[in-house]
Structure formats: C-alpha cells, structure tokens
Image (cartoon, rainbow, N blue to C red; front, side):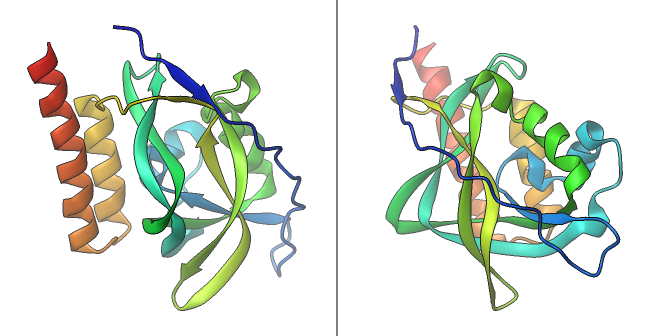
Length: 186
C-alpha cells in the first residue's frame, strides 16, 4: 500500500556557526532519532562524537512521529511535528562546523528528505537558541513502523545519552505499537 504524503514548505534560514573558545567554528544540533546514538553518528561522520554531547535536551512544542519512509533503512523513520501540547526529548550536540555537510548528507537534505529547522531547546537548565534539527519535507499522512534495526539504534542512543527512563519507555512503547499495527495489517 502506497502512503500518501503531505508536503510542508518552510524556508530554512541560514544560521552562522557558533563562535566559541574552540579553534574551529561550532554549531548546536538537536538529535531525536538514530543520531542520538553517538556510535551510529560516528559511522557517518567518521569520528567519535561522544565528546560533542552536551546532554539530553527538551524541544517544546513538537512531538515525535514516523512520517517518513527511508528506502535505505526500508522502514519508517522519525520526524518532529509541531504540537503545542507536546515535547520531544533528545540529545544536544555541539559539533564542529566541518561536520555540517556530512550530517546534511546523512539526513538526505540534498534530495529533499529532511530540511533544517532552527529551534530552541532546554538542556541542563539553560536555553539554547538557533539549534539545528531536521524535519521531514514530504510527510506521510500516517505513521509507518520502524524496522527492528532502526528501533534498536534509536533506543540505544536514548539510553546511552541518559534520556529519562520514562521517556525511553514511552519511545519503546510508541515504536512497538507501530510494529504491532503493521503486523496486524500484513
């Protein structure tokens, strides 16, 4: 069954790299899906990313959903969708600007898979503004279940980076329910 897509267009604004005491320009990045897992992110970025983890962060005014089909992963993958009554917990990274392009490639920005969205997150009691995250460009009308591999890498990232246990269980239950629905429909 082919999923119908809803296309949302929001022009991305360019945000300059954050200048810090680091010898190179940096930017903040909020990960909520497979990129929460520093091991999986290392696979793409070709360097250890543990050192760039600021901590778990809260993105208010959004909720998680599996509104994209990934051909590479052959499953539904995560997206964040505006929702005033919800929030998303994820991982805040402070990455070197040189990793911006490889991250965009991973998120399929060049082919219109995801696009940049600049958000405000709270981490360690501090507000971070102009934080990059990625949102799906062509959203499915209904959620599609994740594969077992994607399910596991998302949970591994959530646990590895110390997301609250209650949130990890909520994430587990959401993914598990989608898989059960898919099995019943098959």
